[in-house]
Length: 452
Ligand code: NAP
Image (cartoon, rainbow, N blue to C red; front, side):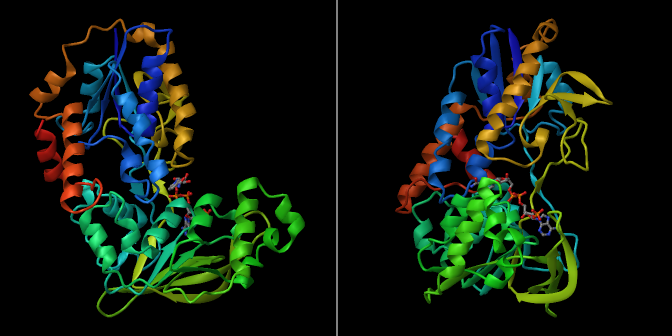
């Protein structure tokens, strides 16, 4: 038997586990999927926006994998800490596949970034998604009239949409009650989503962009003069030569430019060719706006500064400029790429493949791509591991790793514990007159998991 630990129960971890047990070359593979949280599914549970129910429903297929009899879910198990260092994990299993994602946000590196009212989109997403680490965060939106979102990727679109949507529209989702309450009190009337490059270079996908233009009670605006700065927008011939997503984005934005304001109570404005140079604050230390430098295309896909500036007022600023991986104690890390060095998924230590250690997902390739991108990525890693299986399986293992975890003071939440959390969330929803509602704090989750 080959016993493997997969660390992380998001899409990359679950796809890795699935590939490992479903292949036929190496019989008798058993996989434990470990997660620091008592709940599975990673960013599908804690990152996909609550109003994107179709993507959320992917949880159903991830669940089917985790219920496979050859796979065991072990939540509430932190790897890399004192109780379970990575070296110890490797003693308990023949191989370990790290699928730990990219947990942190990137910084802008400009003055004023630490003012009150400036947050990462990652923290905002974690808060409205009920991530237990964000339980203490309190986004008070009552005093916010205008918000600025810096960045033009799909996360920027998500946070812009959630800020602009009415709480009534979000009530049918599983958003935790405190976040829903804060959104119900929100004073936000204007959200500016600001890109440093042009419309043809935006990172968001067209479906997500179009959705922003169809929110009830929200005007979607662009500044036609800013769109026209983009040569690929101004010249229909150049637009036709763009990659498909960029071309469709440009066409969607053309539609926005042609539509007039409807007088809706809230507005989303997409701004282009503005790069943040300073976050502005008042004497009370709270953010009052962002100073942007106007940029111009450099003809090579980048931009140059023009030396002219524009201040955009805001009482809330969310920077949404991408995720980055964090080092896991005991694993090598490339601080520039924010990933673990690897060759076809085999972890490289000092340039050499380390026996029994693998990576998949964002910690392997960086925070890019959609959920489905993790499938081929996990397959590549699983295939490297299976090629090494003969060598890995020679080692005698101690007994059941769960006993060792318990002896080290960990309290793993197994599948029945997770099912008890699900039941408690359904019950919480019923008590609030809503569908299932997330339990957003550690104590609540562990308490519910204990009711098995
Ligand atoms: P992203 O797609 O990499 O977008 C990052 C954005 O930040 C880009 O517009 C980038 O502009 C901008 N940026 C970076 N540094 C900046 C700076 N210093 N100043 C101003 N702007 C800066 O990252 P993401 O939005 O976090 O998304 C991560 C991944 O998750 C993506 O693959 C995304 O598609 C995926 N995702 C998908 C969905 C969905 O499918 N619905 C939802 C959420 C996330 P430049 O292009 O100029 O660098």
